[in-house]
Length: 515
Image (tube, rainbow, N blue to C red; front, side, top):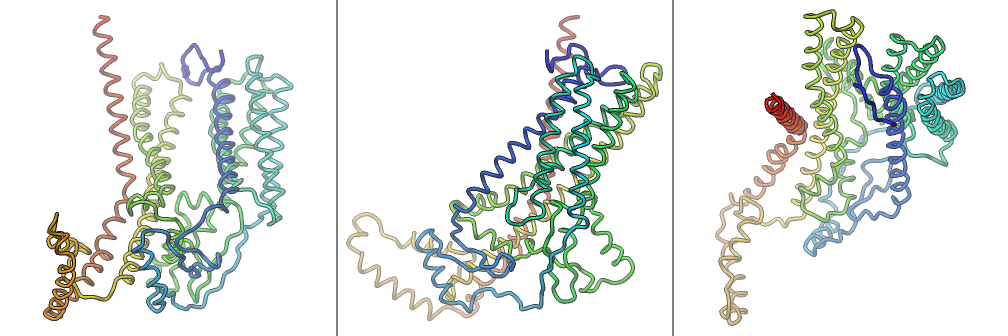
């Protein structure tokens, strides 16, 4: 039966042939391509329906200029609409960007078309190699299904690479994020190929099988290396030159540089050699500037509370951060298990072959590197979300403060004193009916008396409360997202520990009962 191996998946020093053919060569590659197809369909759906969304709050007038945004009429409650109208009438109170000399320049990657052509040739060579495997039946009669699956997988990859090659030289048509699909598939195919390459070196079935597996590993390694050394998307990006400040380096960094943070090495060496000056610090990317972050946030219509709205706006970044935290949590247990088998080899070398021991040592290094990579990426994403969240909160508080009337009040928490006075003075029942007109006159007179006798120092309380919200509360709320991945990792580690504990307890109980 397919994907139903009778024996153990791991033998004395290698995976079983059933696991290699049914899982590494058939099931896992088809699952990866299926995920790519599903995500591609989702991208096409959202691209087709993107023009139907109505951005109710604000809109960028010029997509190339992050400061060119204007407010629209907000279809919320009546109070917010009146406040927006009042803010539009008082245009002098609106936030304005500092007029600086900045120019936008398009930076194209080196060999943009040449890299795609080389990638296309390697993919076609890989497709021809697997067609040869299918025709020669080098994997045996039980490996025919695996050969057909590999031909289908590489035919799909060749289709994606051909579309990238055809659409790379034209701006009239565009296919959404095809580079991410091919890079995603190359990474998984390289992992599968490494395991199959090791098996072909240790236990070759035939000289032809060994040569074909070596060629497969070389081509997949070439494709994976191309994706690692290319910038994300392998496309041209716009860089902003603002005065003497150098443009941002993150948009032009390669995938390997982003993973290892080597793109920040020049600025670190600059700080090591001399004292930092303003011209030594790079500019921020356009999408990370406060005006662009607030403008993107205001383009989404508010339909819920602030907390839920912020979670909805930053959900993509939080989910990616949770994914990196999950990878780090799983890899936490890998060094312990690998050290166990390495110590078993040291204690009894005759039970484990030397090549398997070296394989465990290499996996120990790889698991530690991947765990550090996952932790670094989770922390980096958390810090970016933290800065953007702080910009959004401060911008919204400041915009709300501009909409408030310049009246002195004694409230320390915005809105609490007014609500308390209304609850204390509001009559109930029949008394409310008979005192309708009197209460209105009395309230107007009391307000005039309060304004006449109020000390001047009380006028600063509202300003202090607003500054406290922007300086302290916004900082505390935003810092939660910076280290949220530790919570994900802790919960995952606890759940894995409990599951392993109950599994071990259940196995021990079964052994005691059987004994």
